[in-house]
Length: 248
Image (tube, rainbow, N blue to C red; front, side):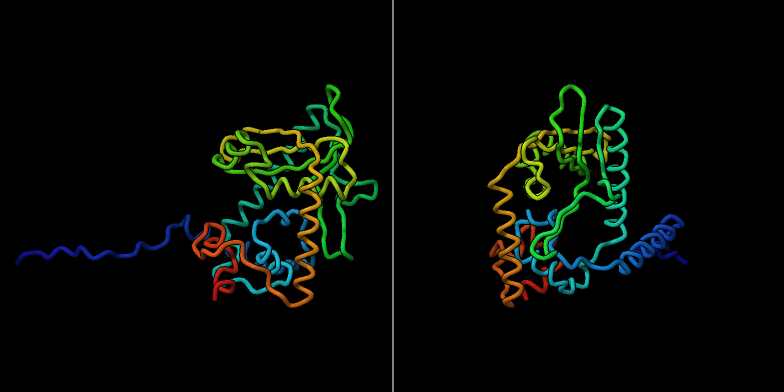
């Protein structure tokens, strides 16, 4: 009797590694779901290209079924916080008097529009080596190798406008406009570090502030701001947590 070979694909059972990671991610997602949502427009988000997306964030519109943060995304965010803590330690060892809390023990930040716009800075450098101009805003980001190389090659304003808007807005509201901000970017893949002095951009700070006002007014009036594109397959739309809601 001839033996018949079965070439049908069979799903492999999850490995031990898969099982453990699934448990970790499930725990992270569940924990994140218990965190209160922001009830304000974040200064770090006002550089986003799409004002409608910022409306959805501010109004706490339900995300698409697949629009929540995955366990992997939450692990990436957590790694960013760890790298920021390391950057603080490294800069202090290099001679920078970097403060992350004010005299009251609170994170440096600002509120505007009756608390409906808020921002929290990574730190303020009050003194530095080699004649470093202080006080200066300090902002830190971590990025994968591709994005980090773009920042190092082109500078933060061109490579990451959302970060540049955040820096300008924080400089304005924290009164740190006389000296350039220090922007630090850490390559998560290689641990290379990029440091950049970012002069205050008054026009960018003003346009970001005006954008916040326009978003709040539209929300109060029940108006939905225009999409930033007419193409639902635009890169920014394909990865938006509200794509189905926006285009339905």
